[in-house]
Length: 300
Image (cartoon, rainbow, N blue to C red; front, side):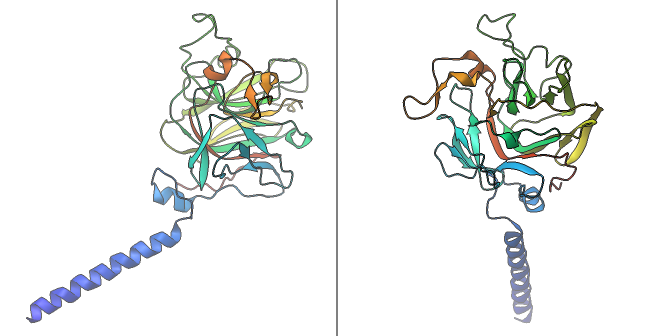
């Protein structure tokens, strides 16, 4: 009998310890858990916050609809294409993008978007690599002279090119030269006359996994960060060219073809570029900053 009672007390004590451990874990988790369930990563990382060098931050926490709210005082709100939707993201909700003509977020041009130095960062969970040259995460880049500022992309598979498909525009054929599939690409056009400067990360970005990615430029060095760690850096002097181009998130196409005639903002007619360059997967916590950051609140 004594042995039985002792065993019971021991099991109760073990159960209490386990429950206490679960309670502590629950306190450590933020209210918005990622759908991947990697609790240890979530509890040790932070969503990007506002500070003095934040140009804009889109938490993409909306429960639905076509508004993408900028949480900065500048209120550079975006309009989401009708084929995007919200789902559980890295922190709270995030936006799901797919390979269609109406999968994108457009932020109209505003003076605060121009910055000679820059950090562009986001949490991304790609579902697949794009079939063409690249799939932009975000960028202010068009095919019109004087409107190319910067572009932050993931290099694609290049299976669909202008050399083997008549409808493929091949806009970024020259940009991706030297970059392998899955690598980050950051391109910018300098104020001084010349060609675009293009750089690539060393790491390949995995699919079906949340990864924090960032590209920075301080006027002298372009740096890539993956999950908060320095991945690659390149010396290059210059200033990023200002532009009247809007910020386009999750795709690349001629934004002049957008029309609000039917109520929602949509592409007026089919544009093959909008499908070929469409990002596939989720994007969350996109932040632009006016200086080159080195810390991102990301912990392994």
